[in-house]
Length: 623
Image 1 (cartoon, one colour):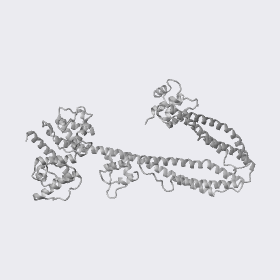
Image 2 (cartoon, helix red, strand yellow):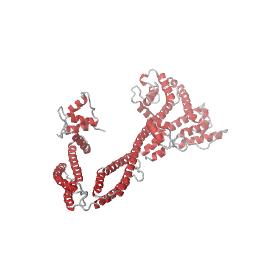
Image 3 (spheres, one colour):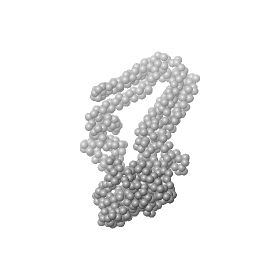
Image 4 (cartoon, one colour):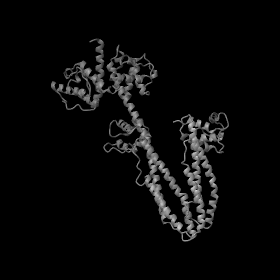
């Protein structure tokens, strides 16, 4: 044996002994001599059970005879073979006899299988995978070129670079030079031991003092660094995922609580109003009957519309909750009993039924009023309403050409606006009925106010359709890739701030628009260089901004739940495989204090572990 090989074996023996003890210490065990420690198989079995995370099986814990030692060793070697490891020329008899070379080979085989095996992917061996990992992590460092596990690590910079890449807070890499390898290696070993719990498997002198450092010893130490840093990456990823879930869960729960509270308030208010309408008095004389009718009309104009508006808001809120949950792969939200959308719709239908009964009862109390005036008003109102229905049906008409659809919609809008000339006659007829104390008309459900409301809503619908077609045409001609919905939103914003309706935005109108959008801040000191620059650019150094320039500017400034399985894996990672997780486990994932506090309050406690939180039950509500 050459002197260099003897030195390698000596260093390997020391390194492998420290590596073995770093695992045996988990069971309170320690070996002194690698050559003799495995002769009876007991320490070897303990090592395999620790790093293999499974039992070897029944064995003789206090072997006194050689046959018992051989049996223990054969059981250990079979365990290794069962983990897809080939043991060439390594037998139980040689280990029992204390063969140093074969014992070192056995330990090296174990290291390759259980410490570096996670890197033998994509056709690479464990060694090649570990080397590729080192090269990838040290690539940003100009003075590090990892080509092997010998001379590439001789100056200590590669070791320091691996630590600095993952934990730059632990050492000042820029202050290191290749001229002081002993300092570099000692720094890396000390920092790794103190802050990363990586034992000193090597001494700096073991590397610096060798013409060619021992490859296996360096690989063993680098593998220990890889184990720590790969787990750290997993914790950070898990922390980010759980942090996102925490923020999302808080948002969704707030929305669900808001929905439940508002839905309960709406259902209760509808029930109260239904009882009031069903039991309300009709009036014993004309004056009191008129007062009750006026109260009913006021209710229809205010409270009733508030009910309908709140129902629409709840539908939008409910759909938003469901969309958010679907986006995270969560099960659908189930509203509390009696507060789901069909139940709310049913409550409104019951209210509508009571309203119809109320209206009919009030009408019956006033049937002696002049029928002719009712008919006169009804004929005019119904005819106008029929016109509105006709115009409403035309809203659905469309053409293959956007330009033709726009022209048709504008023409219909002009006709609709012209039809309003009939409203004065309708209002006069209603005034005559009111003067004759006619409070209800059995020939029509319309009032001048309702018709005016319907007209205004229909006029708004036509104006919106005109804006829509114009935005569609503009979007079709637009090369920026902005959607028609965005272009329509730009158009509506533009028209809202065009206060004088002259088709362009003045300097003040444009500034008010950008300020409302939060693009620029209002200045009260007369100096606004930022806005001056924007206005000059968008107006092309003019005095006004047209819509095309406005749309182009808006396009230029408007750019933009891990799967359930990933979330489960993330919680499992944070819990280190346990069925429960603690607040400290959550903090190890780099989550904020607010996120940790929320989860501690929201997650159910584990029934068997004090301070443990049952993350699996918590996830059942979201995945």
